[in-house]
Image 1 (cartoon, helix red, strand yellow):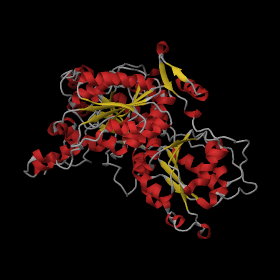
Image 2 (tube, one colour):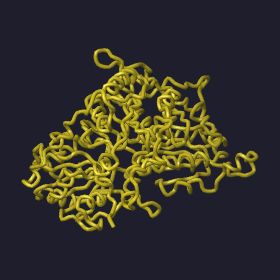
Image 3 (cartoon, helix red, strand yellow):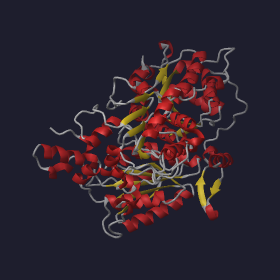
Image 4 (cartoon, helix red, strand yellow):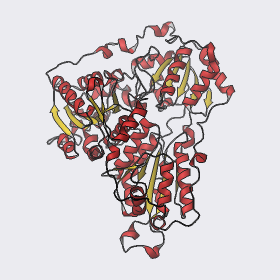
Length: 638
């Protein structure tokens, strides 16, 4: 209902009123960039047919940096489609265009279109494409080439922008690509690309449009078929025998554990996960990068969400006699950290059922397939589809218990919400702010308001700060590990959250912000509300922890770990960078008291449809503590 209401308000270009008449979100994006003198445009050019196919497939937005290589396609979006469905989102860098589409897909569970200018734009975009690939995000990317016909190339510029195999630059980290050479082939390529990017497991696809072809008149008789006949297939399900086998194993277990990675953002998928855990009396553990896929305060979510195992996570997994894995990131490597084994493939004593489709995307270019996991029951199916199958198999006989069947060895583990870490308070209201203080304040702010959605988290966000209560609470973090991706991904997630009637908030590091800050301009230009909070330690601190480790291993001085890593003297003026992109900003704020006040001011601006940045300065963290707090990062000794 919220999404439907949001769409209605968006169409009218008005401002939604929040509780007690307070302003909520300005959702007037569709009133921007309206073409004039459209008249009654006729589909007369090949690029018109391509644009019309995109519209019929339901794409709402297209992120882009303009380029002459797709000027025909650009004209069709503006003067044939009227810059609506899809509407252009103007960006300042191709990397940000793809990052925005990546962030949008994480929340909306549907792809955004992206237009990329020839080979130079694709080179710019490649890192963000890799991140979208690692996050298995559906993205429909349009590139442009040529003209392939050398006779019609303009001197110099068309020659250096013509590449014989554009997609060769990115083929190792996309699902599919094509470079059609006729109007009919272009229509089919778009239909196929849409089908492939939306099919599980999802991933970005690339259609390269020849510049000469775009500008040809549309041949007589070319038509666009009924696009519903080219819809993606339903997500793959498991055979009934395997469903029954897993249900029986989970029921038989004394301590069944369900580990969950990425999942659909729908309320139905969320409710199904909760119901399955309750019916089976299973403990649940989620991956902190996956976003909100299960209510973290639920009795079944015994230990906090994590990226690397904490002591309570380790105790839970070691005590389990049955583990049902739904795409937990690097599941085998995670078990190795817990079990302390020298070889990843050495199996846990627990029975393991692994449900995944990721093997269909693995290739030899990159080792993102992670360690090979031992499994007693290996199932090639979509996890959310398999959960629905399990619930159907259990049927009416399954009565939710509401809590896991914890055997005596694990009953001593209190639910994580009762732990000292979960109940901690900032060490000081007026003294210098530490990293733990920042996280505590952000947890209170974000998780205490059901209207807020979190687009992105800073490095070191602890599991005890994550109190997810709905599938829209948190979009999940970058899966490609690329510094500079956070701002663009946050803008894309904020767009989807705005359309869902939520208030978007993002946490970013200072290095991430400085590197990708001009992605925020698109939020200002397209009137996308966003509260950006920078956790600023004036350092690439993740690497300080690494340099500390290497120095100790080599018997050298760990005190030198900061050299070549500090972003200070002078510290970049991230507020100045944000203001240059059209944001209101304040900072640096250096105490908890100042920070809370700044967040309140930012909230009012964003709830009214604006954009705001808070630069929160924290004291330098403890490198040794950082390493131990997240499981030691898994380095092998000796």
